[in-house]
Image (cartoon, rainbow, N blue to C red; front, side):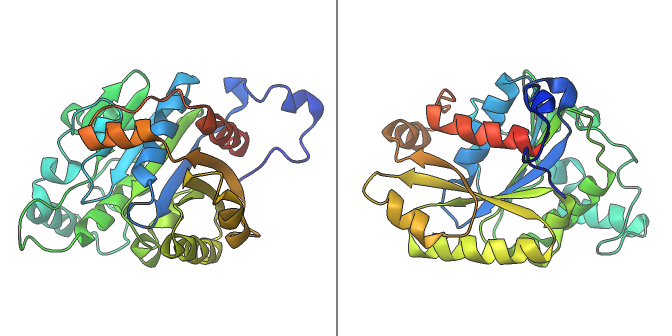
Length: 278
């Protein structure tokens, strides 16, 4: 489904950075809880926007609220709340006759990110950030409605050429069980230096292959002492970047401040994203 730069002619390869030749793609970022998914999503979104891409960043994690601070933005009104909360959303899908996995008129066909309600979008330049929904109260129920909302939104979403969609998912692999990953084109799995995280990467790779999706791996919080061991543990997988164990990122995340996007180590990852979009 995805395409790499391998085998491209020299003339086309020389035009890699020409926006005219970049197609739209939807990337799903996943991994173990705490591995750095939101950090990678924020750094990618900020840097791809700086490269001239229109970026639609979808927050599909119902528990994490720090993604916006990493970008220097405020949390917008979650789309689920705009639709009347879980109860209101269920009523709308019921009225539309939209069962699990069904297409539905809840959203119009060929919906574009800019058509979504303004109060549901945090905007910075060509970057738009949308929150699907959050768990706010004790006993309010599971996050299943957010998964259904994701499916219905992406079944109607129309992405213009040169647009890039990045989805920051909840921890784990439940989204694979719901077939939500089929709405995307490529999986970016974030791995931190822990056994659980490395095993999660292997699991994600297997599930993504079942879905017919390509997988790339981003290593996070890597130090020179452990880099070779992590790479060896993930032998056979495509590692497209390695982010360092950065004190700056740690302190900014601790204090809820925007991350500095000018990190040299994120650039090879952005280059790979553009090659996949070629």
